[in-house]
Length: 483
Ligand code: 1KN
Image (cartoon, rainbow, N blue to C red):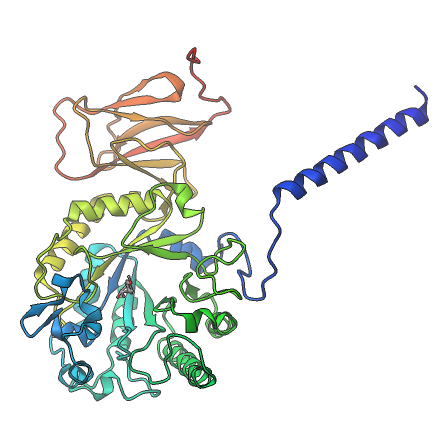
């Protein structure tokens, strides 16, 4: 072949490759829908604040407000009997609005002790707390200057949010503020924008919202983020440009601020994920009282799961007749969330007087007792990428060659099967609480192994086995079965 011929041939090959790869990518790549107010970045936030958030593992949610006075009961009837959540009691037909809207005149939580609250949370092992500054009823737990419906006008008079922010921050627990956009008290709130009048009122409402949030950031500069709620109505879904600008404004005046995917809507009214499927927020905020089944369900995003201890209801319910989650159930949910790369947040509903119900105190104590021994498998841990086994959940320490097995179900054989992901080998296994004593590993096919528990082994609590790992270039392909 001559030089030109070779050149021509090369040119032809290059052109063919270009042609086919373009055609291919056109076929497989979806058209991007142009959006002014969609996600402004994809992938995880990797700054120090978000890395810290990712490592929390366990959090506390607190729902406390004037609804806590009624505790889910009115006139001897239980709202929970008709499936109602105690913090929503104002919307129950049994409760006249004028009664609810005057409850604040009785709000006087003489047993409120923020230092004690923070100490309980600290003992429990939580790394962050989310506190209700304003729920849907519109009552403000801080002395907002933009409404009279606040703690300042109760017999208690004093700010609640500030002392909570201070006490928890002092205890080393990061504080996030729950804030409901939907506000049943503000006459400018609208569910939809149908008339010119609606839009005018809602414009006032947007300014009110921005003012209140600015006020919270100014009053409590230690906070790390907001947890928004009540953003599902058409009025808000049609205000995507506003929620986008609000998000950017809050982050500009408070660098590092963390806001989940429940604040914004895109140009077309999509929430959480924009029309192109990209997350609008620093983490996915849709896992409320439910946990993803698989890692694929999390879309590889950051996320947290918020959970009630009773079946439903976030505010204090005097009479709870349904199931109350046991500490072991909550620990299993915690392990499951961390194993899938999320944080787990357990809700508490203090009583109207500021004290916690005994059952919650007990759950908190027992979780803390477990965390004292086993939290190494929770903090700064995430998805390990190993095939799940029936005994429980793997978590992996970020940046280290350590995988934890959080074991909930010991098989009758007392042998726990593990199957590391490809190119990972297990060097040794031991109980978290006795690092010196190695557990025997028996190699099986396909890179799997058995960990044999000691003969007399008995567990009445979930426990943790540490696996020290190293990288290998070998694939774990065992003998291929003939099929
Ligand atoms: C099913 O509809 C709702 C609406 C609001 C379910 C829950 C909620 C609120 N979000 C939780 C975090 C609580 O504040 C609850 O009142």
